[in-house]
Length: 345
Ligand SMILES: *Cc1c(COP(=O)(O)O)cnc(C)c1O
Ligand code: SF4
Image (cartoon, rainbow, N blue to C red; front, side, top):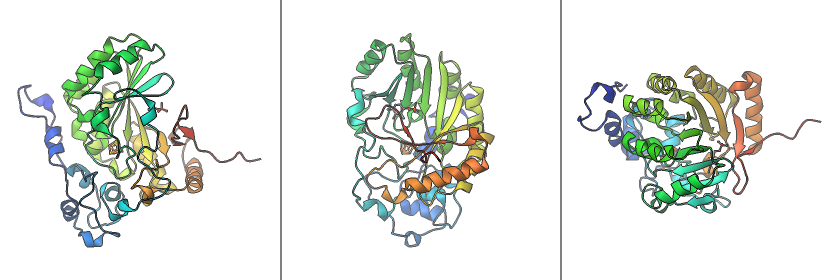
């Protein structure tokens, strides 16, 4: 386990924060990752893909939670670039959720009433193989490079926008100094009520939730929500618990979104254990997403009928507040569509 030192014990003039070092030390080669957990490429069904345009990236602390010697470990399968990604499937595309047409300004997506999503960065601490943004043209669309002012002007001009969602990539890949610049820009917009952050950092690089970030969060003038992304109960170890506790102490409401993934969390026991583990860490389950049909991710798909069966299993096991909403994102719709069984007659 990596010791959780934070920048709070260091003077501001110290070197880069601990989390940036941890990020720089992440695995980038499938062979090296496999070796660290006692596996060889030959043990991976369908083989590995070391030349993928969406390269492997996995922090060491996340690898430490994998089961040594298990080629079907559910954490490993989320991040290992495998040969199956090269199988092109009909019905799978580069922009499955219709982000392109929803661009209101460079880096700003306005799909739903009252809230806009800022693509703050293309960087992520981990590369999830099923990611729907794996083909996203970040270089052209990041708010930070071009037209940042355009996004701010758009939000300022539309008083129906009450909530800003910082997304990416992972917005917590940005330094806290940079996040502070963003929030300073947003403070000038009087109609904002909530700031939401979509981040996998607390789960995959919990060191990121350091004292400096906690202070930034605690001093924001809006109600603050952080939506984490965890798919499996084994992702929530003691380091993650501490990070989530720090967020809670900073006054942040914690929710989780998960993606339903074949061979990773596609059974009711695992999903129920995930809900229980999240709640034990102070997080409420929010969404369970059906896979966005992004090219290269077809082998992760769980069909809708099976998903509905799993939801039924969850309802039989859990209190209602621990049952996530099963949704599918359909381009052009005004909200994420609930997926439900036909009503019983
Ligand atoms: C998912 C998403 C949101 C947030 O939707 P909620 O249902 O409020 O969680 C907002 N904007 C965009 C572009 C999204 O993709
Ligand atoms: S953390 Fe989120 S945005 Fe980043 S690769 Fe994973 S799913 Fe995609």
